[in-house]
Structure formats: C-alpha cells, structure tokens
Length: 240
Image 1 (cartoon, helix red, strand yellow):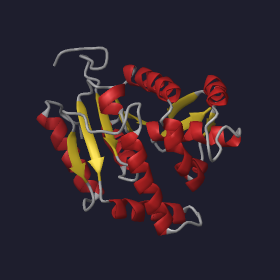
Image 2 (cartoon, rainbow, N blue to C red; image 1 turned 180 degrees about the vertical axis):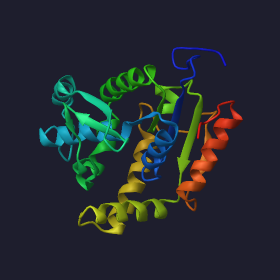
Image 3 (cartoon, rainbow, N blue to C red; image 1 turned 90 degrees about the horizontal axis):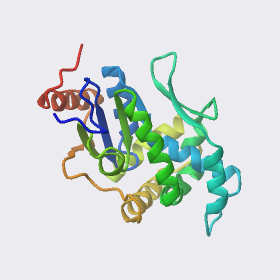
Image 4 (cartoon, rainbow, N blue to C red; image 1 turned 90 degrees about the vertical axis):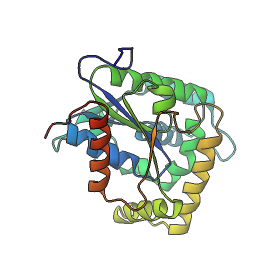
C-alpha cells in the first residue's frame, strides 16, 4: 500500500466511519478501537462541544448563529481525547472531561447549524487530521472518509432505519434521565439527516470506496465480526 500524509507505512492505520445520526457510529467506533488497541476520536462529540459552548455563550438564537462570537469561542477552546481508566477514549474540553449535556436535545437541535459553518468545519477538521497523524485511530463522523481522511485504509458508511435509530437514542436518553418523547427524537433525527446531506460544506455522503453497513438488525458482536473480516480482506491481521 502506498504511503501518503494520511496513510502510514509503519503499521498504523486510520479507520473512518461515516453515517447518519443515531446509527451507532460512536458505539461501533469505540468498540473497534478498544478491540484493536487504537484511540477513538468521536468527532460528533467535538461538534457538540462547540455547540454547547456556543449555546452557553448566547451565540445561537432561533434565527441565527453569531459567527464572530463563534470564532472567539473556537479560538479559546482546546479539545483533546484521553484514554480513561477503563481504557475508553474520553473527550476533554479545556482540560475538563465532557459530560452528558453534549447529548441533550437542545444541543441536538442546534448542532447541525453549527456544523454547517465553514469556519467550524475547517477548524475541527484540522484538529482531527492532527490527531490521526500521531497514532492509529478509529474516527467517526459525517465527512471523515470524504474530507478529513480521504486516504483512510478502511472506510465504512453506517446506516440504520430512522425508526430504529430513534428507538436507540430514546432508550439512551431515558436511561440518562432525560424527559423526551420518541416522536421528538425521531423528528430530530430526520431533520438532522436532511440538514447533514444538504449543507453546502462537507455534506454527508458515502465515499466512493466506503463499504455500507446497515446495522438495523445486527448485534454488536455481529458488527465486530464484520469489521474484523473487512480488515483481514485488506491485509491487516487484528491481534487477539
């Protein structure tokens, strides 16, 4: 395999996972990273962290996003991933571990608007590329295989039926104590699908060489077996 800025010849690789909101990208990517001993980069959490900070600063209203205020927020934010005591990758914002507020409906309703801004995507993409140059990573998002790492060794496009995705998110939020309805979550998911695919900058789309995985009716173990087989087919031999 030829080397480039994004694909390395020292045995380290990049696995890019793109797909729709609520399709389980983060859980899937985290499990792969843990299984292979790689670092997991949750790019969606990065966009949510920026959105949460923007909401707290009053940079987002019903009608607009204050681009200048958002630029100042980005200038002052430091985002990094650290391996926690349980071996999982955790997002830290300005030195503090991110919390469950990132997954709130308020953030979910606003994150597509923030993620559509060119200056936000450029800034976070640069951070993500730097993270992927120093170690093997599993990175999930909506433009990883198309924009951030177009030369990733393995690209996966993850999808699932919107109703299935809504049920998964509902269970997750209710377990966290959130007072939300299934209908509200499915509405949010369908709106995010449309916004992500229609935005002008780095829209959600499947890379030409990405493999589609519909996990609507797959168990986590079945998904793991599938991805390990994809790696073996590309000449990588996962340990263990």
